[in-house]
Length: 135
Image (cartoon, rainbow, N blue to C red):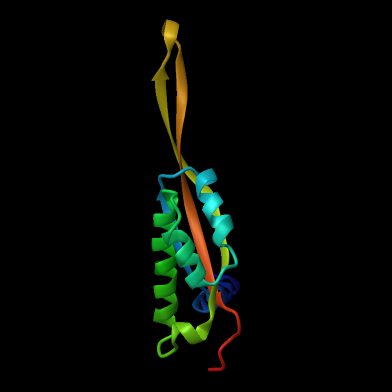
């Protein structure tokens, strides 16, 4: 590895230490349905977002709730000794990307066949504090 690449890699590694995130890959829900919930909780504080996901009737809300709890656990691991209530955490960024697509065939009349696309997605969630703690 060249010197410039190594320096750049170290900078990226340092930036990742200051970010708190969780990633959900290959979730078997269509990205369109997942984005509906992602748009609702984007920018909300974590307690409000957890309440929204707990009482939402949508199937994707359970998976997003687990993902949010994972991001909170990642934050706790990097910030030992700091209480969540004092940190004032909120969902900084959440985005949903499409993942692999399973292609299936549905038989139809007169020898035809329709293609069924079973979509899945990747969700990335970043949390952050509203004010930076003085450490």
